[in-house]
Amino acid sequence: MRKLLGILLVIVVLSGCKKSPESTTQEVDMTELEFQYQKMPDKAPINPEATTIVDGWEEFKAFNASMDVLYRATNNEDLALAIDDLIEKEKNLNEGNYPELYDNFQIKSRQQVIRTYLYKVKAAISENQPTTEPTVQMLEAYNALRKQFNVIVNSQLDKKLILDEQ
Image 1: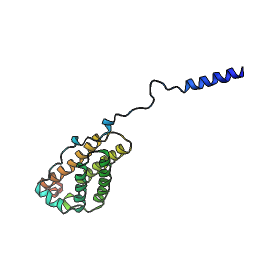
Image 2 (image 1 turned 90 degrees about the vertical axis):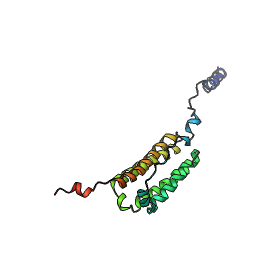
Image 3 (image 1 turned 90 degrees about the horizontal axis):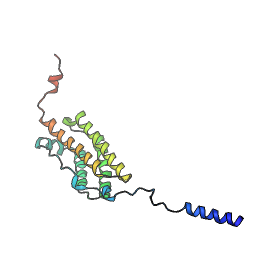
Image 4 (image 1 turned 60 degrees about the vertical axis):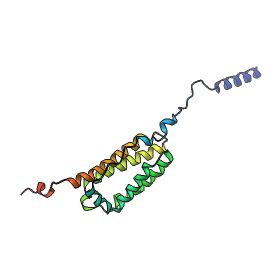
């Protein structure tokens, strides 16, 4: 009786260890995780007046050079290196001195949005999630910053006249 119980127990354990036809692990589609650099938007142009101001801004020039490296990324490994460099350059940009014309909330808020998307891309890379969409969002935020440079330079409004209540 003991031998029969032992054999029955072994059969039950082995049958319980049988692999089920439905796999419990999720298989991730690798094509979805690959970085699709073809979908990256083009850089927004900066007009000549804004370019003269930006050329004297060393922190932004370094950030812009790192952004150029991002545009050359073709896979997740390149993207990870470029994002790490961009995060460092963005920290330097945030702590650095802004040109007088660009030392305002309009520029700093757009920079905060870029920082948010930089960390979103970094999280997607570290969590092994799709990276194309957050990268495109970050580049759109970067283009918004570049467009704001043009808007500020082209603005003909005198804020002192508008805010002066005399």
